[in-house]
Image (cartoon, rainbow, N blue to C red; front, side):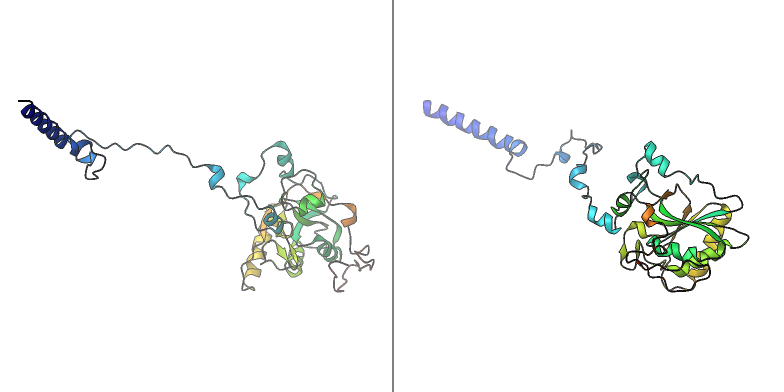
Length: 264
């Protein structure tokens, strides 16, 4: 009697285990919830967020200094200091004169070239198009302020046309090299024409298109409204005419065609 009861209990236990195993065994991959009659798949939105620290690329300051970083509008500060730097050039030329701004590499040689143009009454070298108010030369060379080295030219339009200034601009540098002129590499050496009036903008664009037809490579010159001009340190002003690094003065006389030694 006891043996029969035990056999009956074992058989019942085996039957229950066998019957329940297809639904609850974790060792059998054949179970699929989608095949059950009461299961209905739902499409839930993916709310996971990738770690910005993990997926963002590190900033490479040394590449910034070489001018190979990319800058987007979101990189620029939006505070009041940046607003001043990004504002228009509010300086006023001498009555009857006009301003023009050009960036064509190191501003020493560019300034001397414009000093020699008849009708140009004043030249100054400085920094513009950046985000830092009152930048120093060191700030500009760091590659983090986005300033360009420029020459601001004051000229008499009755004696010198804006087209004449543009022709000299194209002849003075290579407008197809991005953030570079010769051995000078960095965003501060980029090619740029910064206009003060709609007429200057129109003339600059037309001039660029004419010169593009003469070149095999694409011109990368930026043509933008003139922004606040920060006069560079005094030792940069008329640097080559004063003697440059080695004390050899170069002529700034009107019409002079002497070769310009860019570093003196």
